[in-house]
Image 1 (cartoon, rainbow, N blue to C red):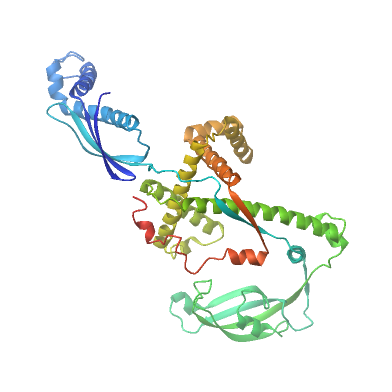
Image 2: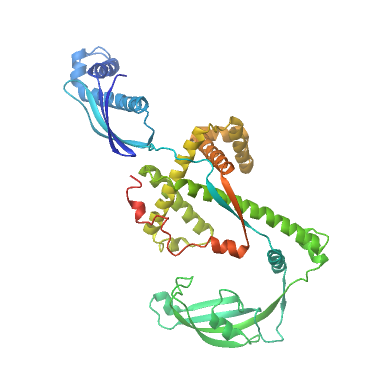
Length: 465
C-alpha cells in the first residue's frame, strides 16, 4: 500500500500522523465493494444481481464510502506504524477521516509510543547488599513464638486478674455524646476476651480489669484517640459496664528436649536451635537478595527521567488500585469501609509507582537487548508447567489458554526482565553490609521527607503524557 505519511512529534511519547491513501487504491476498494453490492442488491424492477452499475453507485454511494473507510484505514495505519518503526502502545485516536472529492482518503491519528532514550553506563553499578545477621536472641524469639502457639489456657477463677491474664467479659457501652442514630443504641457485645496489658489494649481496660474476679461488675470510661483503628470509635468517649465471666492464664511449655521434639522434630534443644538458625540464615539471604534487586533498580533509574506513555501509566495504576482493594477485602475489611478511603490520593500514589515500574521495565528491557539476553522456549515452558501444576490442569490446556489470551508474551516479558536484572546484579559492584535486625529496620525506616521520591502532585506532571 502506497501512502503519504507526515509525522509530527507532539512529545517524547506522543506523535500525530497525517495519512493519505491514494485515489487509485480508494477507487479499487470502492469498486470491490460495489461489485459485492451489485451481486446482492434487489432493486425494484430488476432481478438480484442485474441492476445497472450506475444505479448501484447512486443508491449505495454513502454505504460504499463508509465501508471503504472501515477497510482501508486500519490497514493504512498499520502500514504507517510498521514502515516508520513506531512502537505504539494503546489504541490510536482517529480524527478527520474522509474521502475527498479527489477520491484521496485522508485521516489523522494520534498515537502514544515507547520513548526513545540513550542507555547510560550500566555495568559495574555500585550497590549495597544489607544482610541481616542472625543473633541468638532472634532464635530465642522464634522459640518463644512456638511456645505461644502451643500454649494452654487454664482457668484461674480462684484469684484476681493480673497482667497477662485473659479476661472474658460481657460489655455494654454508652456513648457520652451520641451524634449518630446507632450511637444512641450504644454498644453491646458478649464474650469479649481481653488480654490484660497486651499491645493494643486501651489503658482504661487494663486499669479497670486488673484485680477483678469472676462475676465482678466494673464500670469505667474510655476515651478513644482520634487515630484509633476503628473509625466508629475514633475520637469517641464511652462509659462501659463489664461483667466478668471467666479468668484464664496462659501456660507455656518449658523449653526442653521434649518440647524440641514436639515443635520441630529435633532430638534436643540444641538441635532445634541449630535448625531454626539455619532456616533464619537462609531467609535472611533471600530477603537480602530481594532487597538488593530493588536497590539495583533504584540505582539504575537515577540516570533516567524520560516521559512514559499515559496509557501504560493508567493501566498499571488501575491494576495497583484493584490489587490494593482486593487485599483489603481479603484481610476482612467490610466493603462499606472502602468508601472511606481517599481514592484520589491513592490513585496519585499509584501513578508514581506505575511510572517508576514502567521506566524500569523499559530500561532493563533495553539492557537485555543490548546484552542478547534472550529467553529460551524451555524457560517459558517451565513457567507454564508451574502454572499448570498450581491450577491442577494439563500443560497443553494451560499453554493453549495463555496463547489465546496473550499470556505467553507476558511470561516472556517477565522472564526477560528477571534475566536482565540478574545480569545487572551479577555484573555490579556489590558491597555486603551485615546488620542486626534492629539496625536493618532503622536503615530501611522511611524518612520524614524523601525528596528523591516523587509526590502525588508530581505524578500528574509531564513525566507521563
